[in-house]
Amino acid sequence: MPVRKYRSVEDMEDAFWTSPGTPGHHRAVQAVLDAASFFAGERPAEPGVYKFHSMEEACAQREIWDRRAASGRDKPPSVKPSAAKA
Picture 1 (spheres, rainbow, N blue to C red):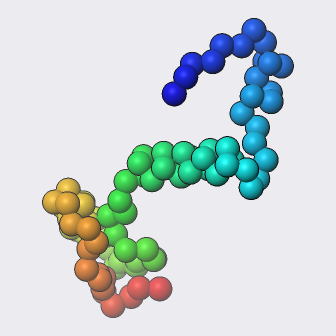
Picture 2: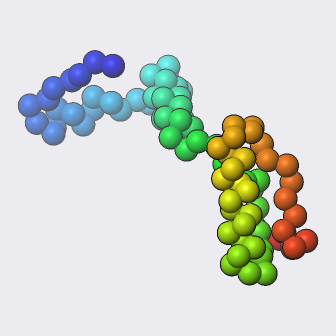
């Protein structure tokens, strides 16, 4: 990626603006999405809301998710904490 120098902020205003539908816009959006997926990492748990009866139960489930994420599993199997997933 080239380094660009500007003498003032006014010089920068139009430098990175692209119109939707142009190839430059597509590349810019793709670069942002690639960076976001790189920094976001993988989710340690399936999406949803989990309800637990105690803080200990929640912490134990979090430990399981963390161990699965650290072991490199692609996707953890379904988890049914206290049969209360809303």
